[in-house]
Structure formats: structure tokens, C-alpha cells
Image (tube, rainbow, N blue to C red):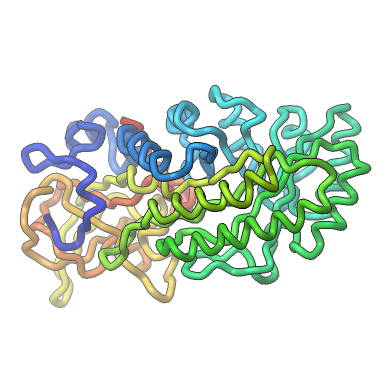
Length: 410
């Protein structure tokens, strides 16, 4: 296999040198879709990953899917049968989630800046609203009274600790997310008189973490924080969202997450702390990227091959407008290649070093920088892996006016 790929790509099979997604050769899949570029998600790989997580974590853990990772309706329909709940962050995601068989009382709505209209929709639907501020509580109280419905609420807490090793830190300092831990008791006192249905707490300290020991440390700190906050709660804690943050491999130097270590840590926390002191709590681990990220591939076709002062460029019909993160997020300081391969020569040895660039008029449109690949011809398909999460909907699809790519679940 090309040296730019890594072990994660071997989850996908190949037949006669052609990459398979969902058991279908990608050249045939491209013909079926009718155009390139496109995103393809392998439903069997998604189901397998969910099974692996469930096998590693204690049986009492409820598994929630963070819809923002990939809100494709067909994917959510599949997920509704595999996980125990959904977490949404907008009215658009809420609408898609409610169109699946997932019960509304297993849907949570987080995120700062919820509008009154969004709060009204969430209350009417009966989902759990994760409060991000005292002001949001006041507005929710008004909406709840107008509808005559006691809204289901949990408090999202900005913890007083930071998680080590996270790709994105969401605690330990000033944050737009959640209520500062030290301010939670005062907000809980307001919940008492608001006629709201208190559920519990959500604490999410960081994302894209490949260090199991760091995740375990954060989970222990989270449980201890919740136990302190529970003393001020207006009722029993029935919902405890410990967040997630499980990372996946994006570069060859990344090492896979040690899931068993996390499972053992959670088992100890449940047995020795949560079950004894919060016996009514439904304990949730919320994952997005970890469940779907490695099951997706972005497929784009080579439309030109050119030499420029000693560098070979493969110009493809896709780019950063569809897969922004793989390009380096508009010029991030440290850019790492996502695993990439010539999907129509998947079993061939690497023969050359090339730059894989998109079709946009910017030098930032770079999908592969000095990657070793088999010799690719015009018409070959290039596969960018780890494209199942934060791909299409996290990219500037309107940039330069190119059409949005299709998505298929196979």
C-alpha cells in the first residue's frame, strides 16, 4: 500500500486493486453516484465501531451520538438503531434527529446562543435542553410557561479543570460553553423556582484525544465535580453526560486509542462512586468522530497532472470546499496529511512523490503535501480517508461557487 496510508485505511477492503466501500468497488460506486467528488460512508464499519465501543465500556453506560460530527439523514437513521441517544446543537439538527425513531426524551440539545425559537421547538419536542447560561435559563423559563410544559433541563458545566492531550480544550478557563462550575449552585437555585424538570449535568472537557490516561483522568475529575454540584441540585441527578473526546488517527504517527483502559476506568467509577452516590443517574458517553470518522472516504477524480519546477501536481475535482480539515483548515500553522491513496490503484506500490491539490484558486487547496503514491493518471480516483466526521458540513461549500458533493451510505 502507499506509504501515505496507515493502518486505519485497512478497514476498507480492495478487489482487483480497487478500493471497496460498503463492499462496492469505488469506480462502480462513482458511476452509481453519477459524479465526483462525493463522500461515501461504510455502514458496516460504523456498526462495527459501535459494537467495539459497547464491548469495551460497562453495560450501564448509555452511548449517545453527537450529530454535529455527521448529520446525514440516512446515517442518523442507521445510528438510531445502534446508540441510546442523540445530542444536537441546532434546530436543523434537532429536526433531523426527530425524524428518526430515536425517542425525543433521549435527545439532548446543547450549544451556546440558542434562540427563543429554538428553545420553543426543543420544549415542544420534549428533548433535554442543556443550559449554557443563567440568561438562557431565564428565557427558557418564559418559553416553558408560555407553552405550559415543564421543560427538561440539564446544566452544561464549564469545569474548573483542563484535560491534557485534547485536540480542542473545552474547560479549565473562560469558555463560551457552559456555566462556570463555581456559578452552578446559584443557577441551580433558580431552576428550583422555574417549574422546570431538572435532569442533571453535562461536562465535556476536550475533544480528539488519543491519550487514554488523559481521558480517564478527566472522567475521574468530572465525576468528583458532579458529586460536589449534586448537593445543590433541586432533585436527584437522573442524567450524567461525561462527554467523550475519543480521538481517531489522522496521521501515521498517531497511535490508536486504548479503549479498554477507558472502559476499566469507567467501570471503577460506576461501581465505587456513581452507583453509590448517584443511583438514579443515567450515565452517558457522547461520541461523534470516534463512531463515524474512520468509516468515511472522500473520493475525488484526477482531472490534470502537471509538472512545475520539479514538483508533480495531481489536480483533482474536489478540494477544501468539501474537506476543509484535510487541507489544513485555511492554513493552520502545523499541517498534517490525512491518509490518502489512489483508490483505483489501491494495491500498487508507491512510485512517486506528488502534491494532490484541489480545483480552487488558492494555494491553500492542498489535500496531500509531498505524499508517496502509485503513479496516478487522469481519471483515477483519489481517496481521502478519515472523512466520516466533520467533513462536508464543516467545510465552506459555497466557496468559489462549486456544487456541493453527494453523500452515500453503503
